[in-house]
Amino acid sequence: MQKRALSLQILRKAFLPFIIGVLVCILYFVYTVSIKPVLNEDIIKSINKVFFIFFITTIAFLIQRIFSGILKWYSQNITLKTEAKFDDEFIPLLKRLTNIIIWVISGSVILSNFGININALIATLGVSSLAIALAAQDTIANIISGFLIMVDRPFCINDNIKLPSGEKVKVLDIGIRRSKFLNLEDNSIVIVPNLELSKSKIVNFTYGQERKDS
Image (cartoon, rainbow, N blue to C red):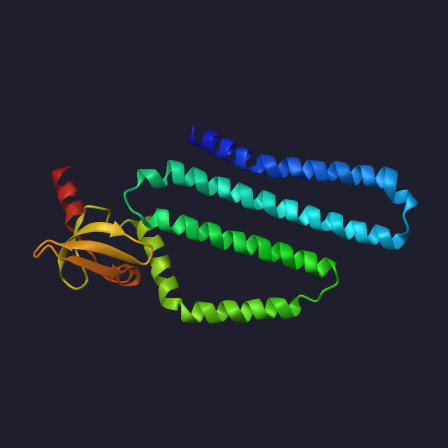
């Protein structure tokens, strides 16, 4: 049932770019058969470049829509069934990042077809990405750690655990960078970076009680 829902979501998202692609192909076929033979070579080269832009843009649009459909399906069928807010925060971030990558690659391909040397652009993007990664390495590490916590599930929402600092707390939220806990002794809110949680020992009292009861 979920596979069918995923397929329908992808088909809905891909319908518009698919129709645009078909129209572009039909237009190119008509141009090749009826118009191209009567044009000179310079005009033909210019028109071919315009069609190339349309083709690359349509393909990029199609890939973007398909990925968007997959994320929307995940949000509707998986995220809503989990109590953690990590998915709700991570999916929009992943969607924006993917869109940027798709259109940067598409733009590079188009510029390269026009004879523009993109090596300098790629080098600049690489240096910029490295600088951003170094500046935000703690944030990136916390995001990755939050994702690993969601995958490994050492604790879930409402579990009673002991933090690396020794505090006994109740899990309130697993965030994209930090997680929130309720201190069971004084009812204060404890906020801990996900990186610290992922590399430290966590004692889960709820898992132990469930195993004892079973």
